[in-house]
Length: 219
Image 1 (cartoon, rainbow, N blue to C red):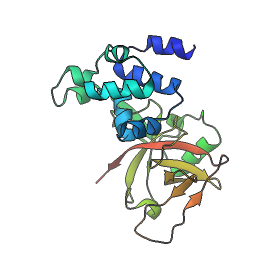
Image 2 (cartoon, rainbow, N blue to C red; image 1 turned 180 degrees about the horizontal axis):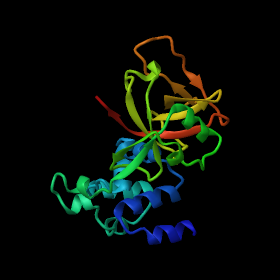
Image 3 (cartoon, helix red, strand yellow; image 1 turned 60 degrees about the vertical axis):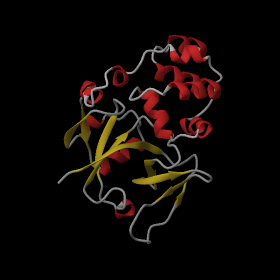
Image 4 (cartoon, rainbow, N blue to C red; image 1 turned 180 degrees about the vertical axis):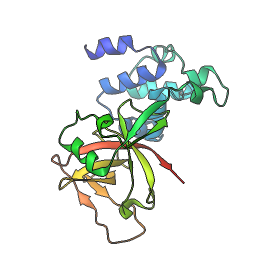
């Protein structure tokens, strides 16, 4: 399907923003910089968690070189059409995410079609993100400022192109490690209370297994 056909079929405001952005060859971070907003704000609009306000729609139309009336005519998100505080959350479908070991996660650097359900040691219900995710328990002091030992981190293993500042699971020397992705140059940075962990510089041969979508402290 061509870009123009995909844009024509986009029904919601978020879908129209996403398709117009992709047709311009922009990342979410690129668009965020043009608008002076955060990358998560773009992600929330595109996923339908929130709709951009009218003034921001006008800025989006200009940044994306798209007609304002076309963007504004998209279907409103459920969260915007029902303002009850819990409505959007309660309507989101619950999915049961398999929890796997770090050793099993290493297989995704070799075979991105691997099925984490065949490796599951447990499951945890979540209501956000991609339909293809797995959870891993952190046992790495290199990121203890953000993910203390024992934190469950949910990884979207369809996302192999992390934005600057996002934590991603990468394979380094055959071992999966969770680090903060930085650009210019591409590198994997620790977030540790200790100074013994080094930044790892990455290139096109560094497999990105997936990006962190959420974390859960289990007590």
